[in-house]
Image 1 (cartoon, rainbow, N blue to C red):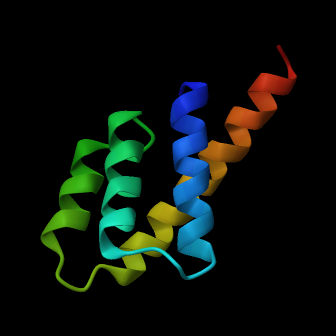
Image 2 (tube, one colour; image 1 turned 45 degrees about the vertical axis):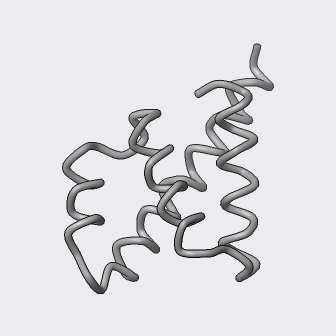
Length: 78
């Protein structure tokens, strides 16, 4: 993950967690996670194919939060 991707994900994550995100923000968040190989294409497809994907989105949000923490830890170890 690049610094730019981290900042973008962090800002989207913050909007999602404080309840100010739109459906498009959530979709962008999931797409960036897929594009950075944090979630698989199959996980992304499952998210896209479900009409009621709130539980899956919560799991993806948690995975994204772990990725953000892992990025920070890796930057601190450089």
